[in-house]
Length: 451
Image 1 (cartoon, rainbow, N blue to C red):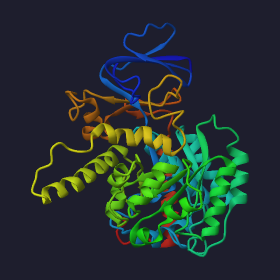
Image 2: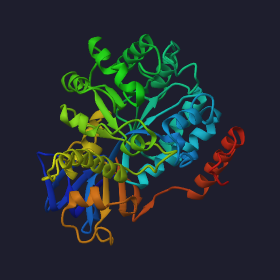
Image 3: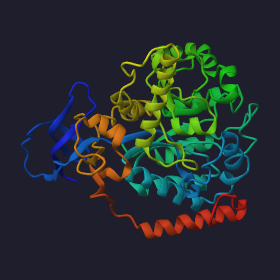
Image 4: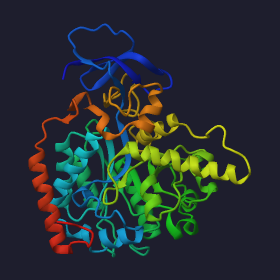
């Protein structure tokens, strides 16, 4: 790939030691960032004109169900209970063929790249090893950086509090077959059911398996009507199982004391603000995390019900949390001043903290020399952005996916001039429609769907 010099952009490194620049350059050699500063002198480079661009780290989505892209937006009016009943327990999720998972993951990963998400955790529902192979094939073809979180089938026999079934043997084989090295775009995680959707003994067994495999271990936990009752984080803490390799999605109803346990002993929270507010998980835990010493990460979650757009999720996270605090202040007879959560903090949640939650902070999340060159460029000449006065505010409050001009993963261009590269969109659309139709022919077309 040689050397690339991103020249004269507004550069947001998000690295506190390096800082941000109104005008600077980024030098990339191969897959790595080697220098960030104004006026870099370098020869034998591909010079990329960034003079009308914000140059920044690729966004990192800490929780996404990627295969669902083939049935995207079918659940725009679904509650959590409706979603679980429609996707899990022998329904839509169990009707997929292996080829449906290939195109679902390829389509979903390309959507992520197109919108400036260079890294994401793919939280999977595994039906068979053939499905696993096809999911991984789709991710590989996309060119994205992803954590493939190997999960369990969506059947009721797996997803209940008494379940002792596990598929750890398959996970070990998948690790050996596809993920022998961490120096690759695709790395492995485990998507376990956790103590609220399987037996305690099974959860402990799967957490220990993740540590044996040296992978991040992600689970849904602490939301809905059962979240406050179960006190799962406290149980994990009492069993000395907490650690930075455990990732908890949602956590809307956990106690402040449990958050303090995470702050002290390790563990990350993935907030998926739009889906949580929509479906009934509870109020996003952004403030609950911050107030108790935990910096959250951000995820999209289920693309059955929203788009795979992290710019939107940043806005949801920021304004939902500001509204929560502002309402309390107003109820006390005062007006909020100043706002307690900043746009910069939320941008860090979607980059720095999300990378940490996936155990990838040594590779991505900031534009730091030595890290992988996962870089996106946002056009500053677009009418909804120009003129740029506050670059951080621009990215968090004004930018949408259509403003993403270019995307690089490990130094390789996957999008330039607003278009994905080397992608046969006609073929992808054809395969996606075929898969969607095949699934709905088995399930029955939902009432709100026009096909």
